[in-house]
Length: 246
Image 1 (cartoon, rainbow, N blue to C red):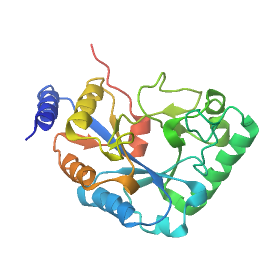
Image 2 (cartoon, one colour; image 1 turned 180 degrees about the horizontal axis):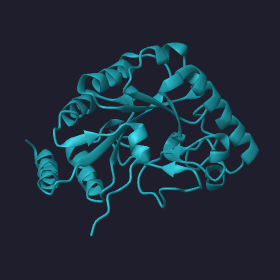
Image 3 (cartoon, rainbow, N blue to C red; image 1 turned 45 degrees about the vertical axis):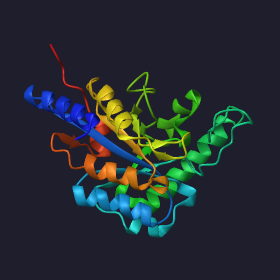
Image 4 (cartoon, rainbow, N blue to C red; image 1 turned 135 degrees about the horizontal axis):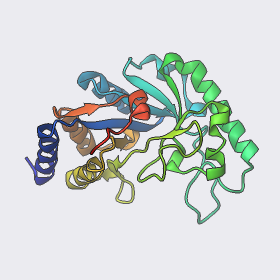
């Protein structure tokens, strides 16, 4: 057992001895069509009974995508077309400041309607914006479209960034995007998990099935075998309320 796994299991044992339950949840991005990598992710969810929140790109989603899903898979909305509209030199986003609010909301509504129609009971009205970025003026208006949740990455200022809108972020990305898209490494992934676990909130794991290398898949297989963790479905994660202490 490496130092990273030992540190995590020690933390989980500490939680168990205190009578507390550690919660994880899993979001996988950029789904659009069946592929061996997507089938592997869905297969891991089935094999280990780990709920999967699958962020699907509406305009690229094929009907066949939804035929291979099982009951533990929830479909979230991953933007509308996942096209970078940022100006040169700016951080990537599907929702730049140069686009009107009306235009952006119309695209989001269009994507939601498509997913609701095709995903059926798997669909949950949660927006996971591409590149985990979205303008505040759009966030304020998402509930008017029927969006009930938003999921990005890292720290968040509020659990309810707009009335009627719940935010639940992911915290540990297993892909090192600036280092050749390889697995980020056990030590980094596990230390990040411990950092966020200590906050008392469910720890969100972010994956991108299409770019995983063998090390990333092996890591997930091991992660899903942990006995001291309860994996939340998307519905549970978005309704989670931290227990009172004192």
